[in-house]
Image 1 (cartoon, rainbow, N blue to C red):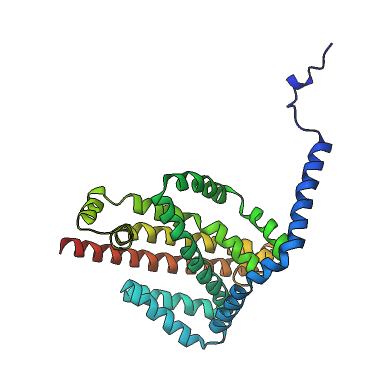
Image 2: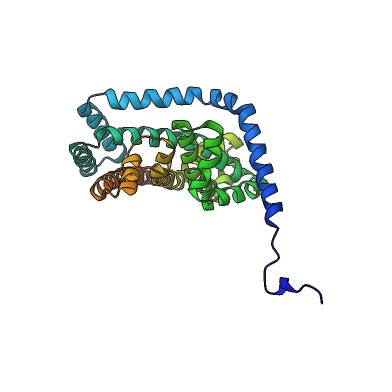
Length: 299
């Protein structure tokens, strides 16, 4: 009588064959990291130097000066005294509870991650908007980046570059960059064809249409993408602290392992305060940009 066990048990690969595949893949990646790890690390050295410089700048500048600059920047972007006062009060409370230095470290890495995500993500979004083939290739990659568990990103990055700021920064960017790419693509594609035809009729070149018509009209959608990127970067702070990224994530991680409820709560609230601050300021700026655009169109 033939073996009919496959009717009751799923016919899976044998443990020996699976172990062979795992050993081959791990060995290949380990050889790659040994062969090219130093060159890749040297490539990221300028970025690491900038990150350390920016973090030291925030830590060594007097707190009242940092507070004044942030409040001024918030008012410049939002034109709201209430929001500026709210941000100032939040930062004063964070400093009063002894979390100022960790907050500045988190602020430095989030700022650098956000600018890098915008610098990389917006051109990719433009490429997707101008080419259906590029969109069909990049969209599945973005789906994988957004659905892959965040912990998985840490494994190859740590194997390649070890523990420290740069591996954390790369993991945060991979996790946070999809929204700005997707919404840049969406915003440009939503620009009315009639508007583009009118620009073409007035003799605008493709570059002039992009920078003079498409990007300004897509700006509110792009700002929504930047807002989501910042939120996802902040959400990654605690996970990145597992590979040595200093900031508000490390006390939260410490409170989880040692069951320090109050420590975790206070640092978690500080992360929430930063998230609300970034969210409200970016939304206010997007609304202002949209109103300004509407006034220009009506004028």
